[in-house]
Image (cartoon, rainbow, N blue to C red):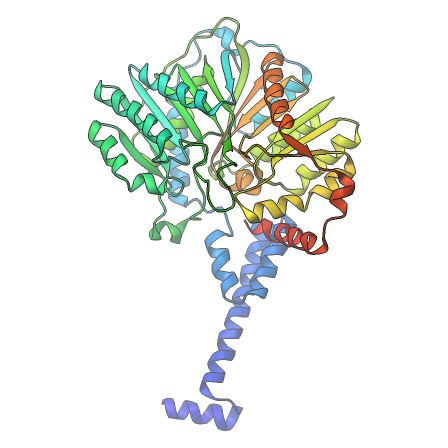
Length: 497
């Protein structure tokens, strides 16, 4: 049979068997590219830049483009996981009682603040709650001390979610506090990302904590079987501590020493610089619900978690928890950032380590600057991601031309993710100003509608500016052509991420 086929191919078609196989494979790949292009138009048609970038990748990298798209092309979280998430949310809604203190829902805001709060609420965020006391810290030692102090004061339970949990001095301090809490009978639950905390999950420290009674669970574990049904790089990027349902902490800080990445592109003089908040009041229950969702998703445990009602505190402020992630199927972070910029009347200041936003966010910043507002963007001078560093710089020229101030922080790797608007609104978030945080990762943001706290955040941002160098538009326009090409090429492929 093989000889007959070879004879037909050679004598009738004038090709060898190997040539016929190659042609057949090329045709098959081409047809698969066409079919997958239709799928891309259907899935990403509302974002033409991303769709065109993926279609170009398919045909520029025959075969490999198909594999890349199947792995990271869509935000596949897994249909069973999505259904389970909906069931968990429904269970939480049934079990969470209404607030017994009506003052929690009574607060006054400016028109602009109310519009931002309403937008977040329409996108699935909980309502604004009053009576919250918040502390803001930019000091890494103080941040760790807060975490350890609250864990040591725990009587009932300690709940933590972190993207990165290292086995360094900071990790040992927190682990020791968790072990002490577990040994005195406190229920301790620790949820860490399956990739971000891969080393810790395989370590003796994890086994030591578990032997003391700490329940350790990997969020979104990266397994071969999960790769077949879901996008493997969807990560839980949250950072959250909740103690006894009465105090919570969140922000950009991971459980790691500031210099834990003092290698590669970051040196010992480029430690992480983070912002962190400590919260008491009704807002803690909303953050507890976020933890309950995440914990139930990856541990399978739900009914063991008991929600409490934190009291409304005198002199407290109005604030709102804004969770986001691919399970929510919306553009919460994108809308939040763009609305913050659009609602500003005098100034808006943003700090972020990774600046690779969509065109609408760029346009919002440029329009705000041209309206006469002071728009300030603070980014690190040195970035631990070469691709992110190049892609972000591709936007600088148009932003500078519009009047946006761009400052490069020089006293370390600025990892703080903050937004201040008119000294009225303050946003502390785990989300970066990039497409990954916009569309892929699970993130948590806290919007605070209070002038005093917004002023406090503005002072922290002013401290960043005092250690930053402002980019000169004329000097930036004179950078080398090869540098421009690399930046624009990185930006060209950024929609693929």
